[in-house]
Image 1: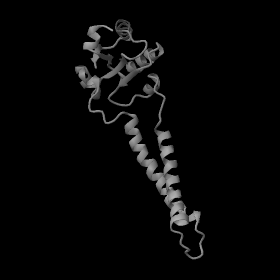
Image 2: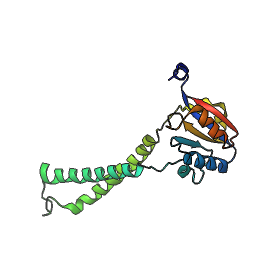
Image 3: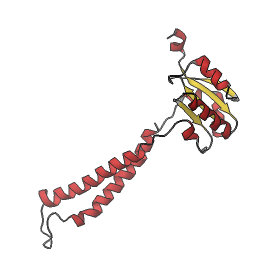
Image 4: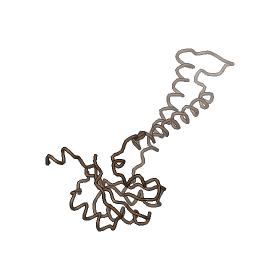
Amino acid sequence: MSATSLENPIYGLMAEFDTPQELLTAAEKTHGAGYKQIDAFSPFPVEGLADAIGFHKNSVSLVVLIFGIIGGLSGYLLQYYVSVISYPTNIGGRPYHSWPSFIIVTFELTILLGGISAAVGMLALNGLPMPYHPVFNVPEFARASDDKFFLVVFSTDPNYDAARTREFLRGLAPRTISEVPA
């Protein structure tokens, strides 16, 4: 690694496009060319863009399932422990382990922990809150929330080579190509 790359690390290369269709086409070609660590920025959702950049994983549902099961089990086991082991009380001849009466609290704790884990899991898996992102260092990126569309190829991508990647992006006919400092 050269001394200049250590002094001025590069986050990646950013290409700017004028329309969502240009961004979508560029994203498909970039992913098709073997670049796997890419990201796209748009002022509004673009149909098919997530698939075009190769974003397929969504772990929030797994987090919700796991915490929902934990909530349900903990609610049921807490009631079982209190009613059968710790403080058994004969109420109207009902058995100590009267599972139908445990269902309401079990259901409520399943929903509570599932819902909280959905919100917290979504934030954590998206890396939020993120008050700083390297793309904010590029002045042109200020228009990403107005009317411009951006595609970033990360320098950590195995296929990334500054000169070859810049030439590849130039072949996609972007409006501009910018280096994104880390």
